[in-house]
Image (cartoon, rainbow, N blue to C red; front, side, top):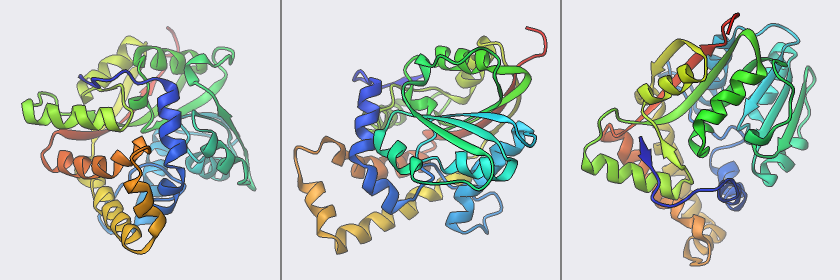
Length: 283
């Protein structure tokens, strides 16, 4: 498991997303996660939505289900699934800016509630959700065993969790490890497990892993698109240049991190896993 050489607290994660709020939304949009070009023919917007839909299909949701979204960001996936399944979605984010944006959005079907708090400190009663989804959030959580234990506790027996996670090469060499450690430090990720380590974490929590797929080659295009859009913004928007030149803006380093992530995918240092896991009927 790759670990950051700096301690990363929930408040650090919140500050990262709050300070980069405008840039995330302007460069990528309200779905703060990779696009999934499964066929290779999807547009950028289609690819981003496809990742959410792909994971939702693994959940086997039914109309009116109560769904948990751990690390909901701006609520894009929560709104999509509320509309599609008339689901009652509860999302968690650490970012007040993300919650403010999400709270201004309405759904015509289902319902969405966004909570700005640490998911590990939730007070929901056991076995009250029909499904759980988490897209690119678990990387930001230091106590990953507790995160999986909480999702297990909150799911009804026989129901599923679906996750998408940044992950490390199973046996990274020194250069790959150095690259991933920098990404963890700059991206506010306490650690980055491998796919095998994620599977073990789910199993240890009591889950039965039913599906797993590594899709780095089908998501990495995200970063080339982001880099191009960022370059255009820097060239045409003085406020972007001002932010990058501001030595007091510690999260400006993420412009460099973007390039590191592109390189990490090309070096095969970084992987991208999607999993579905089920809570047994008897446990």
